[in-house]
Picture (cartoon, rainbow, N blue to C red):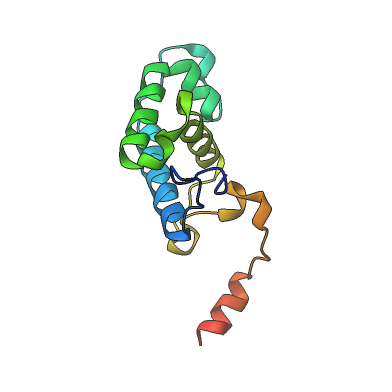
Length: 128
């Protein structure tokens, strides 16, 4: 998705800009996860995915897409909020982690840039 988000002149965004976009998506994900359970009984035990929010919190979903575009103006350059929608949908699929080392899993957002993951054991040794 990083390659789809571009500047108005068509140039690629920087890794810093992409990091900022992902951080905004994570912030908005936190807002969505804080919503109370819906009254609809069909929502019970469902994963909180893009479809879940579109089905049970459609106004909130539309609102967070606008909020995401207000924070990241590059996402407004295409119609129908599709970039914000896609990025936020992908972000919802990433499991939340209490670990500061696992703030965001880049591989889930960008399958084109697969990198081998360093095990936690090797991370400990490299830090020494």
